[in-house]
Amino acid sequence: MTGPTNAGGAVPSKDGTALRGGSRATSRLSLRHSTPLIVTGALLVVLFIAALLRSGSMGITGQALLTGIISGGVYSLLAMGLTLVFGVLDIVNFAHGAFLAVGLYITYEVAHQAGLNPYIALPVAILGLFVLGLLIQLLLLNRTMGGTLERQLLITLGLSLLISNVLLLVFGGDPLSANLKSDPGVHVFGAVANLSRVIALGGALVLAVLVFLLLERTSFGRAIRAVAASRQGAGLVGIDVRLVYAVTFGLGTACAGAAGMLIAPFTTITPTAGDQFNILAFVVVVMGGLGNVMGAVISGVIVGLVEQLGGVAIAGQSPLLGVFILFLLILLIRPQGIFGATSS
Image (spheres, rainbow, N blue to C red):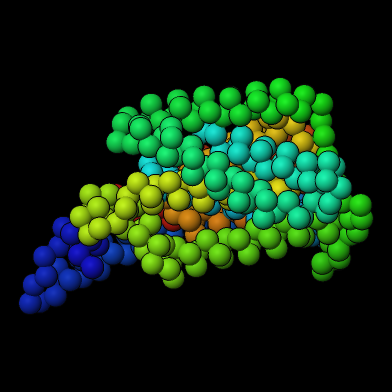
């Protein structure tokens, strides 16, 4: 690894002086990398203690922990699709929350119009959103590839407004729901969570593992990573870059659709329901490191925990106050995110 040595400006010599300089540079770089994690861990500990002292109950604090992990799992799934699209296509997709809303309405249709269990909508939402994303990339976004970031950003923003207004036109603005007929509580170490929320966490983890295996263990996953590393280089070795772009965008929208379906049983369904999750997904993606899928998964859980513990510890304020404080701290310490690559 030459990076750390060069970073320290050291040239190896026979007496080892420069090696010690290189070692010090490596230590400084390692400390710089670990500082965001230390700050995040310290903030979580402080929020946990503050929540415990304020509530005076380990049961309430444990409940906040469990809810935070469950919420974080859903944030991770949503952010995973967003960071995958950015990492491969360099597109900041403002329509991601609107795709989640489409997943919500697909679930509503399956539950109320077809009279089926809402979870039957999961493969429908994944496949439907994958095809929708594939077509949007092929017919719309592919024309702008290689263009300015602002152009793609404005297109996805317009796409988000279009989807929200189509949903408003078709379903109206009244809040809808796709609740389960029976949603009993599940006891976990003294805390209680509805079965639908536990299923959402389990589904999010399973889908995150499947996406990870797709990227790391399949030839198409290697093609995606090759295109993310170098579009020109991947094209020169015979990879169909246009196809990889389309499938990757489809995977990203499928993640949003899956997240929408999984939260539908305990979320109010409106045309703009995805907007609040969109903001949190961007926070998770930036904190985890743009384009870093595993970073998004871990960062999502961190955001969920800070949100819930902060809601108990800082009563009377928005639960997101602690999230945005941590977000600003991470940006100040390491602008590329906790797990983001260091620019050379």
